[in-house]
View (cartoon, rainbow, N blue to C red):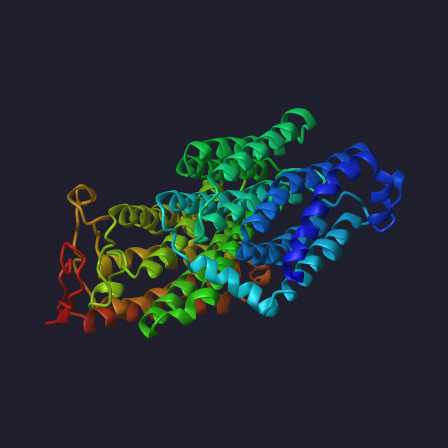
Length: 570
């Protein structure tokens, strides 16, 4: 056993001893936790630390023992990276939002020194250093499951990690529980990392060990929720228990439970946000948070996969990244517009935006990334396939349908509702260039900014995509019926115009959100800028239609998705 493997054994012994020693010898932990003193231990923080240590015992120790038994060297790398990235992030947020067990943040400080620092030490002990550790993890993600069970495990683990992330957000925003983020992280996200390892690892999956492990996790979570009582976190523990039991029957069933639970806890988070006092900044922070998540996911995707694509793929990847950034920004500024107008509270037109805009934005952006990975087109993005680069449809109509629904929701339904909400909040009189009151300027910016975004999306339908079918099969072509564009342009030429509209619209929304326009001294400049923006937008569209006059392309390269470059200007 080398030093790299020995640290797994050392970690297993440590995690095995932490819970019983905290229960039996709390004085020892009062010294370990930077000499915080035994008098600093009370019922609340002791219960929370016991929950953390219990979940470490139940979740990590069996995984480490199995790793040593079956020589899971790849999981050693996963566990080290897990401590460097996941534990570091959750410990940092715990300290920042005041969820540490002690006012002096001794618990988080100990985690940084022992767990995160230990993770770095473990990674450096890899035969190829810390970079070798990350490369092992990266290589593991590239493995394709070889059995139906492992394929199901991969679905369960990916959906479960999404649930774990949502549960952590819920613990951070809603739950006022000491160490709540740390408890939930170990009880959910770390469990699904272990499951995901087995899904991708080429060795035989120890199904009996997984079943026994799931049952242990369920028993521990039931103890935390039904005996110890952790307030609103009890719902997380119960949902995770049901997911684990469902996964014993079938990993797909566990994935369904996790998926439904994700939406449930997002809804509970929104309920909590909307229950805040009027004038609270929390709803705006909530929208900003999900905008940041959208952008971070996109940059992470580019960082991980960009170099593996060819030049044409790289161009689409960066186009998708631009789209993600503008959608993430819109998630924030649309909320800012409604908040400033006093329509971002329960019973106002802004309320549905809090519930619907962030999850649908993330859904749409993730599905776009999936199409990039699958190297298939979509009828909603003609530029991807109209010159023979990709097939128009995925071979799987459920992929086509889910992306089509997400696209319809984000570009038609939610954009239209956002336009309606801004219209109600600002009033149609806010369009007028003939204003002098300082209260009108920011409304003027909001109204025109939202109109830029709204009209540009519908212009893309009119000039580029038309109303396409959501799938290739007959059932998926029945509704909506395909309606060709009445005045088609070359889709590649439409994209710069559309992007310019989105930039100008979001810039005006952001400008209205700031206090720059509140004094009235920039009214004339604002009117001039908006007039120039509209002139640019209209002239660009006229030129695009003129240049593309007579452009035609076949609706489908062929029904089986074969790439055939039939599109040409006639």
